[in-house]
Length: 473
Image (cartoon, rainbow, N blue to C red; front, side, top):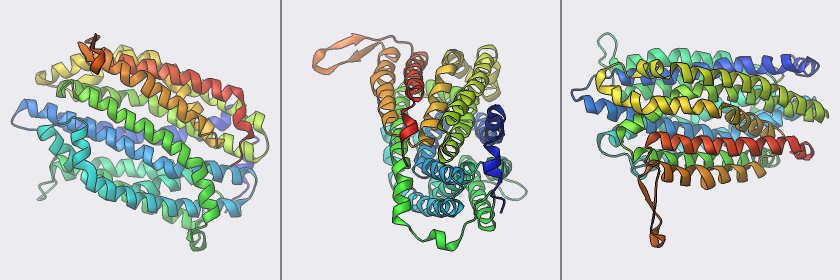
């Protein structure tokens, strides 16, 4: 194993360091986006006898996408602590502890994965009803998510392995393996949906089954790579024996971050229920706009990965000032890229929607979604701040105070403002009613933008304060 590479990387110019880590992560994020866009493309061309039913399928996919996003938030229970601790140990040149942390991360991933799968399989129907999805759309959504829930442990373990490698400064291996996942996902989804040769396919549920099976392959591949050794990390059986002390350290970082991420996910689901009340057309437009908005969001996530890794490694190497500078460089580069994506949203929103809504019967979806996608362009700087500085603070172990920022943004701004801006009037119980904005889907996205600007400002100020430099993990 080469244990010198992570330490040598800390001597590179900051811009180069950030790009070396961010660009593979960016490619990995975009490969996943290709899969999501492929799924959306499939549904837009799903042949059903009733044209209105296609809008229902799009609405179901939107809700399923939100719940799948919830899965990503759930993986934070393992991934954030894995990256933060492995990065600290690698920065301090303690590879024995780094390997031990990687093993405990895999143990936690399996435990949380199995627990999450059981909870999801039991509770999905009730959850879909709570989200105000009704009729065939609700039934289809449950069917779509069932195979993903059953295979959840593989996806979380895959995420934990990639997070450990990222902490060691290796985002290229994750890119290669998860790139393989994306490459396999597309033909699997198409084949299992529409069939191939004599096989007739499973229809809509085949899309999800293809996604789940590709993650199984990715998980097994990453476990084999770590068992053989990569970037200073090697998975030994001895490191899979539960270590209470190290598990506690992993959870000390991950649990607050997971509370932040999961509470945000719950609030996102609440927000989705407000959108779903507007009908299938608004819900479908919302889902497609989010798919394209991911071009900006995932760009920030890639630079956030770089920021988290560099903060952890530099704090482990006792160079906190360099840790701070690396994050500001990541924010400048990532924020600049996200602003470029915002320009694309403004200029190309309508043709972007037409990709998934090619027929005249889906034109109402286009009309509802285009203004929302153009609006989010103005929030790209704030979204960059929220994503990149959140990741940097988590890499430093500062994951408690940011929870309060998330709660304030969602519960103080986004949710109440979404109710106010979407409906003609809002009931306040014994206080009577107030006049609403009656803006439909656009009103919900106005509320989203206001929340992003508030949280983006708070996270930037928290990072600039430098209090994260004194936190021990």
